[in-house]
Length: 164
Image (cartoon, rainbow, N blue to C red; front, side, top):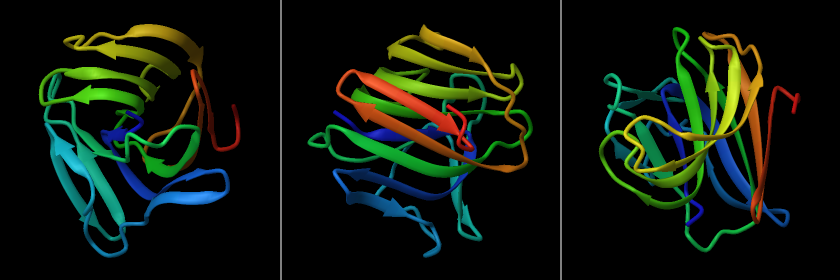
């Protein structure tokens, strides 16, 4: 499945595209997050931004949208991490459920407090990921950033504010 997810952030203007066509777009200007499945958190749309907030460790706030038929695609979103939080985009989602990292998927995560980004494989991990790539990267919180995540078969490439 190629659904994707956000966790612990404000998100605005999200979209997916493949082969030059838009597969999904939501700018939240309509005041709702219709079309998103929400797990383990607090969710709201305020002033055109989708707020996704965890209720604590293993209260992994996750919101999912997408279709299992999508294959090679690009995710682009504007995000704003709040108070040194973590934000993540999940992809190649095979399964997802309520609970601490309950599901089988890959994720690209931005860890503001640790000044790093990671690609992880999650498999009902209970809060731990199989780290595939970790890279130092400072991303300021309480400021808007642009994320681009390209997924092509078994390869994923991420950039934040144009920096890969």
